[in-house]
Image (cartoon, rainbow, N blue to C red; front, top):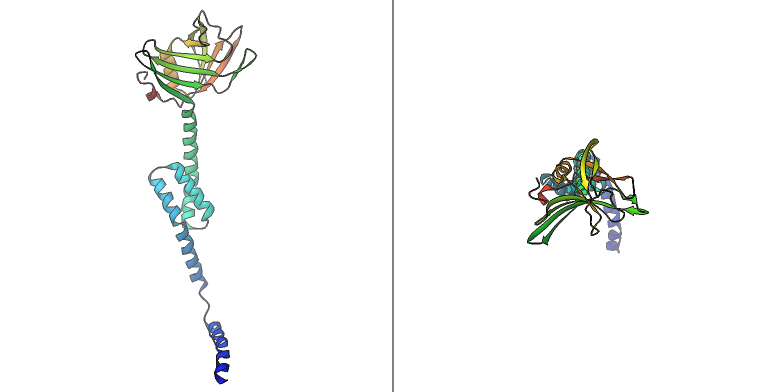
Length: 239
């Protein structure tokens, strides 16, 4: 019976001893929790540092955003925050450049006794012509038999340039005139820009080019091209 009574007092004794234990220093608790948060952020922090070292700005920006959102208050997040605006600016520039590059379509196909190379780009907007809207495409072509040329193509309607015409170009706000010529054929709705070398140099060094051309039965239309994404290496020999 005495043994049972002593056992009954044991939990009370343990509680009493626990109550007498001094409380943990709040500063120590805070330091431990901060260390735990930093440890949790460490993998993302390393990924962020690796991306910076590799100059992979898009990945670095994504990791910085992850740290800001998921590990706020850590040293890792503060470091990411200090680079965030810079990285965001870099990424916007990279994506803008990529968009302009994707506007160009390059082809390398067998033709005659060699290969035909083309670089093509569509105008920013379709034009109203012949009762509907039609895209306007500009093509640089290098053909093994026909040589080099540049020309505009319509899907519908027609150019009014069979006997030759002047084409007004606006090149990053500056005006210039080049000659055009519509071949007397029904195979394609195309109009050549006579001085293809001059047009190539313009497209290589400009941001935006607008070409105004005559159409049938009368009047003119304009097509604007965002040209700065052109990769001259895709057309060897044109440079």
